[in-house]
Amino acid sequence: MKAMFQMSDLGLLHYYLGMEVSQTENGITISQGAYATKILEAADMAGCNPSQIPMEPRLKLSKTSSAPAVDATELRRIIGSLRYLVNSWPDLAFSVGYVSRFMSAATAEHQAAMKRVLRYVAGTINYGCCYKRRTGDVELVGYSNSDLAGDIDTRKSTTGVFFFLGDNVITWQSQKQKHIDTRYHYIRECIEEGKVKVKYIGTNEQLADILTKPLGCVKFTELRSRIGVVNIK
Image 1 (cartoon, rainbow, N blue to C red):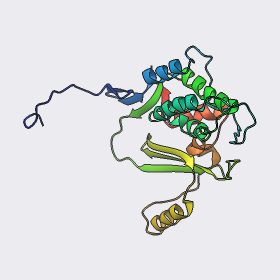
Image 2: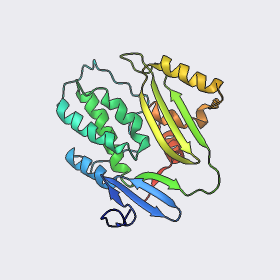
Image 3: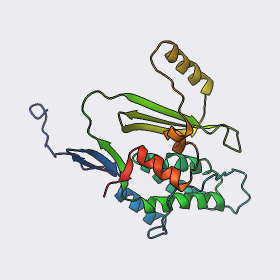
Image 4: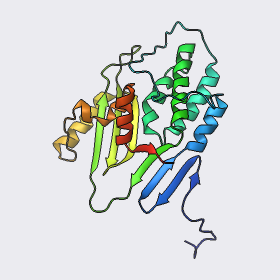
């Protein structure tokens, strides 16, 4: 590359678009602590009381909330910033996606849920994804879960998906189902052709639970650790 183009070697990647990267002999960590701090400052939440979980267990919100209306523009701005934070915090994927559903007609109830997410960010500012160095063969394993018609407005389900390469999480998703029939037929064909293997996962081993519903503190922190989100400072 240097022979063909005029370029400089800047060494190992340390910072890119808010992503902080640390590379050592033991592996790689990715975090967004500095970016998260800016979000808290912009939301006037710097120095707030931290929370151990991003959302109250069993919380259900509705678009038809009777609570007073709030500035939807401000809510959208903060939630948009939080969505970028999910790039290195998979434990935030469900809660941020959930509050995103109410941006068009936000109320004080929705704002309170968003502030709870910010309080969790404040308490885990030094957390990030840890990717351990592995030798030998590794297996691609996925986890999928659903909350079974958990949305009280539409009765649609929220699906959560994790994929791991070995012990390292490489992709995640939490969203309301769409076109589930089309996806179902595609997966069924893959199973029949032997491209993928499907196994039942009990509740205690279902890592994707953290992507489909608000969990209590003990369960949430256990799953957060198991998906590779740890304190890296």
